[in-house]
Image (cartoon, rainbow, N blue to C red):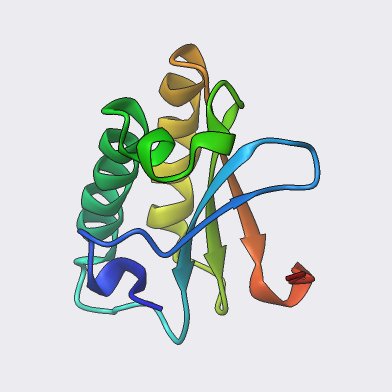
Length: 113
């Protein structure tokens, strides 16, 4: 998974169990400790929002048209407090735009084909 190391790539696109269009940022391994993690996540989130807003998501996956958008930060290791605070604050503005931001530990996910 690219995670925040490759902010220009979409990690996972799916329809979740509630019928939402789900875009997941999947961060495996430890978070960077050089202070760049929040900036990288911000850039990655921007990529995800553009992908959905500019119509690329629906063009590639027409079945997701009209579905509520959820962008989920999925992680193997708990994100640093600065990342969680950024995600919490950004979720407030995203909600006003009709986008839900959520978090989930990889251990909590059951993948289905």
